[in-house]
Image (spheres, rainbow, N blue to C red):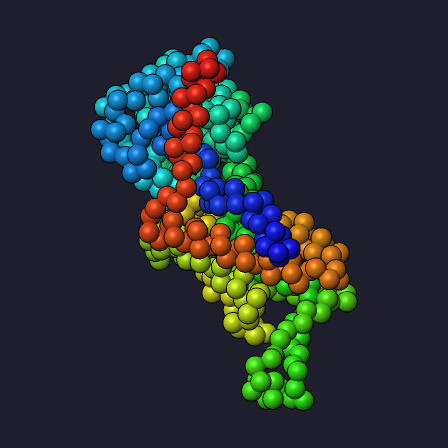
Length: 419
């Protein structure tokens, strides 16, 4: 009974995370700066964010006729949450109706809303940009601004490196239109890599499954006089023995994660460079499955003494998942190699921070009698989450009523005058 209660408590604690895996909340402004014609740009707005923030009821896979009835409301919201100004005054957003369209990415559908900045023919050196869309309504929102073309900065058909990012409490920034340094964009890509690993719960849970057994060693015991007799009698069992020293155990998990790093670096590069392109549904489904298999390995070893095999094999697919951020959201072009390097460095920094936070805690509690039960119970929970995600991704179904709850909650907020 105690085991069941413990399992339920752990499940209730972790269950909310299953609805937020690998879903970055971000929309993007792509900007093109012309010396004589001024500044053109376009919003690429996440349909999921629009449904949440504005209470719209667009389907998961919308057609333009699903979006068209809401386009005026969407534009009004964008005008309210976005602004541009410079030494020449405010630059009014003028929408260009003819080019509205949609684009599909791994993170859902994005609506393209192009516009021109009024009074921008005389280019300023600096542009003050406010981009607060969805920041107040949706937690962990991170909006981006990317320079596609900027003559003064020497950028031609560039979509690879974003210039600014906007988060809660930091929604107004200055864009330097004369800055030719690539270092700023490189550092920004490192930050994006760190950010992506921290909000990618499927990647974090896979790392957790790898880290859990790192502070103990599995020893086999039996009830007979030999292993052969034990096998025949069916009474072989495993005992978990805590490691004695911090350093060997820490370097052990670093070795395992190094194989994970090597693997996802390979496929991140191959996918971002368009050498290999796998269907996103397949990749995301296998990533979900990898969590469950790594957790099951903690309970019943699949590759005895070769934990690195799981880390490496499934790390290949996690690399394709990382690449979707670069390849599917417009980060491609002449600076792709530099962007790829910065993003990958950021992912590694994020992983190291996660290990540094989790491993010392596990090392401290490794000698407690409940640690083996904790390891097994948490592994079971990871398997459940893995199966949930795998089912959703592989069969493209929504197993929860979160969309209905969000919709009804918005109706109540409107009725109470809170919206």
